[in-house]
Image 1 (cartoon, rainbow, N blue to C red):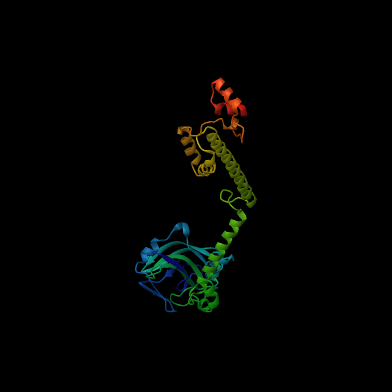
Image 2: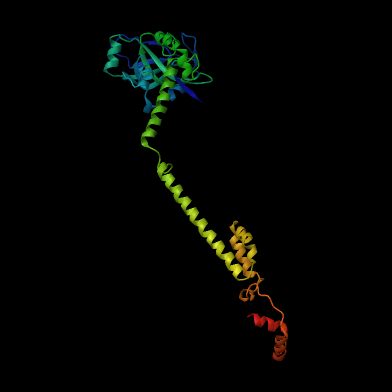
Length: 320
């Protein structure tokens, strides 16, 4: 069940005859309906359940004019004048045992303040009262149960500038308390952001731009070196295959391009390892270019016949 803290309720007169601050005071009148002078209403079908939610570790503070709700969030002093130490249900109403400090006792015994006004949380849908948050001493209660219990404070809430409410993302009907809560939330977010900036970037997630650029340059240099080494290795492999007669010299460009593809050099080397020699060595490189055999004269023909060789071989030998 979602609950929302709202300044609430009633100004309950502190009536006493002893001349001292009372130990027990009424905090919320009997339900099941708790109605404020301004027309708003809350449900309290089970007062004991509200009393049972009392947490001794979070004793409700008693302050002056709800300062803990209105001033403390803005960093202004909001001293306590007493503390609620225990809750008890009496005839359907919730009473609290209070420990007053000197300021609180003096405020009551001098009749500087005469009324109590509790602040509680309630469920958003059913408006069922959940837990007492704090209690304020006030002299301007809105009689029955009313937010902040003070007529003066109620008028202030109604006078919140609509432009401010819109800027805060609140509805036009939002009161001062809602505006204060929204502003404080924004301040918290801003302070969190400032603290984050002051702390500096996480070195595990961010690096200086100069270091980043240096790393990129080194990567580029490494990749260029690897490319040069790969090109040299490919050229040497293809040249060796040509020299071994495994591929024709005219197909060199084709094999160079094929080797540059991913895994191409490995495939080329495997192919060469199993390929036969298709271009054996010849004696063309030892022959004189442009040599033309000339016809033999009668004497040369006779000599070839005497030597027992053909006229072609004799002519060739003559050219050498």
